[in-house]
Amino acid sequence: MRIKFNWDIGIMLSLVIFIIFISYIAFFFPHVGSQLVSDRYYEEEMKYQEIINEKKNVLKLPGKIKVLILYSGIEIIFPPINNDIHGFFTLFRSSSKDLDFTRSFKILKSSKKILLIPKKLLKKGLYRLIIRWKTDKKYFFEKDIFWNQLNIFYLFSFLI
Image (cartoon, rainbow, N blue to C red; front, side):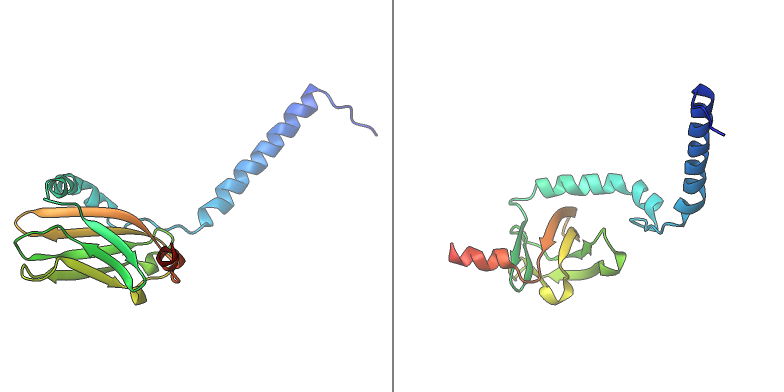
């Protein structure tokens, strides 16, 4: 018996394929694991106006914050401020929250305004560096950084 292909068969075939596709998405897709960027995303969204104000305060500093990628780690140079600096930094990896870490720091006004993140804390990959600190005002700074364990780019910069 030979089935003749016409409009009726074409429409029925496309409906069956569509139903199979939707069933596949409905039953198998929800089982794919995913990680939220933050477990407290609603609370952080409510505080976002504070972050906007803190970013504006960074623009009013006497100099820019410099982030240098060195062989020994990541060096952050703050502009000259005549107060103690205390706060925390977070290195955020979007690929895995197991590689995220947060550390607090304090820099005295009599010392150099340099913060070093040692290479032993870092794994190869893309990080988002977030720094929040306070002197007389609150400040917020963020920058994307790619850390390479070997730092080949750094080694070649000496040769050039």
